[in-house]
Length: 235
Image (cartoon, rainbow, N blue to C red; front, top):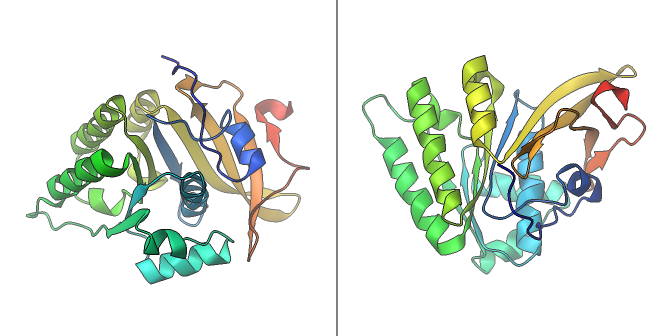
């Protein structure tokens, strides 16, 4: 079902905003899927900085780096979050891989629920390590809990590695989420570039969703390559 029209949050990148139908919509669940080093964290950080720049408060559950490493990485993308950290506009929580006998996922979900009630916007980058011993049923249960939180007013952006998704699970999560992005690295004109395919946004699946090719440049961040940004089918 398509979501009611609401003013979206700008990502701070006009090309990305257009591909997303205006930006990140509130009360939605967005999944960003991709292989290692395909740019999942970069896109997530761009969305996160857009939320902070627009005056929102958020929580980040992070398994990809330390807080110091994250701050430095985002500075290198021209996305400085130091002031937001000092003002407690953003809280960062480490996510670690659970042992089979630990109930880390339940602890994680309690923390997500608490932060969603206090801040409203949740980023998880990435969920893969938390699901290292999970069954497909565990993954579905977790995303259905995310979906319920969004139905009550939370906004969530989650990244996952593609290797953690088989075809039936990918299809189910795509139907469950309001936004579904796939990232991959492609050879375009003899050069390797990052590729973002926006399969679903605002609860609407797009048969010919936007494909955005981009590079990540030091101190500039995401730089869209307009000559190869296109729609599926070359349209």
